[in-house]
Length: 284
Image (cartoon, rainbow, N blue to C red; front, side):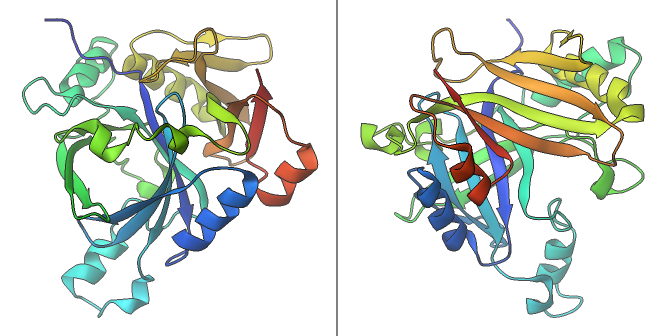
């Protein structure tokens, strides 16, 4: 049996301040995206809205339902809120997911950790965890999350490795593929052109090797010291491929710095800068 694919981009996560996901959804509508209601996650800590693209990658606009101090000190809900992996993240592009296989027998974590250990690296991923959310129509969704292991120095300095989301219930319940109007964005966005990361120079080599193990193929380094990996998407866009880009920075940057979209008609840069500086449009 061939090992499961570990290089299919599933979604990109945009965090908004607690309780503000609907306001941020309106901001993205102004930018020209069709935004769908998502729902509340099974842990009752977060809620989301979705922007689904023609390549079946989606943007997850997410916020915590409440700030930390809304929960009684020492309560289970307070501890869960404080220890959530995104609890200390600032608003913006905070994470991204590759598509998992939803299996607890042929596990994504085992596949990647085996590659890493062959390269002399410790395991990169922890065991799979069950996740889910309830849709506004009442449907319960379930999936398996394969999370990167947390570093000893704390969750705030975790290298930007993808987590994996593998559907237990059908993916089209989580990521609708009809009606066709959900893919029709006024900004003419079609799919993801690239996701760009920056990391401090001293961590560039380590992250590059880790991404090689995860994706299963070595990246290609260009003359300007940028490393690139081609990614798959559930639905392809022909010759327009999706890429993961990694750049070294002299700053203390560690994470996603830019998300670019393929569009039919490119809007003015002034329109883009007015709303979100970390968004780019690439005309096809």
